Image (cartoon, rainbow, N blue to C red; front, side):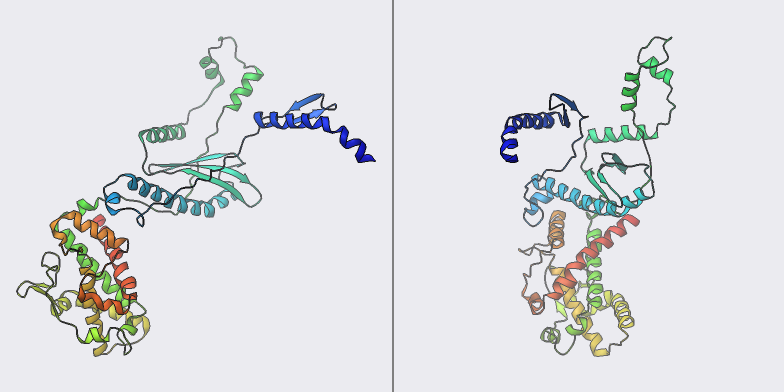
Length: 410
């Protein structure tokens, strides 16, 4: 009986409630009815939390774009820049998740509440950290900005931020009154003007926050690899990196053992390779008189470093390789170096010495993992592809890293 009487009486009030909801949504402020909804009180407007939109995008990277587009710019170049920004976004967020709560717990930034915005400026990069939620022992923040491909507007904004942060000038009420064109006799502000001035007053807090993230340095590859000597150094470091990864591999004992898939190739190895791809311009183990790369010259050029790597492996594993095992390691290293260097050649067997762009294009393809066996002399790698993925593939990245370190230090 109670519901039969009261529920029909509440039907006319539903329209008023819907109107209240619409008005509250428009002005973004709650409305409180009193005296049977005859009088309404409106609260202060609430700030809307910013949440990123769920964009539906297609990822474009080196796996689904043309190599020419990536090297010569264009739309794919923009996606590459966005991927680079995304990489730094990811690591910056991880570093902030680790360091920001500790800084807030120590009170390094004072009293922090939801809605506060922190501006982080470092080495030409500017990002904003907006605090979404701050609770007891946790915080939710959002990171934006941090673009490497900036514009002149971003540079001007950053300069203005630095000038504002570094400015340390006293603020006097008299100067404010003079700036507001008030009469000289009037030295006090009204209550409304005082509240308005306080509302628009910013307190700049500066504190250092160390984050462990990436550091980017730009070196033009076509400039630092222009000469033949530079390209020769890249090839030499590439071969040395292959020797290191070969001796550091856990499967080396299996590759030179009795059940090795390379037994037939090692026993029938030819000590001379007459491939026209090799030349004295890039290969330090090339024999000009014979027109080939020989096993003897390889040991003379790379043997001392290979012996050091083998000695380090023996000390690490606590074992000693006999003469036959050492000979097998030398042969496997020689064959691996030939296959790795031959991977730098193009499909049409054009030597990269013809053009620096051909050399860079092939390095870029190998850096992405695009290794193609085009010579019948390298078909022995089909017996165990782990040597290609665990030795030759990472050797190129290590060689380029050593070359970059060599270039920056010198």
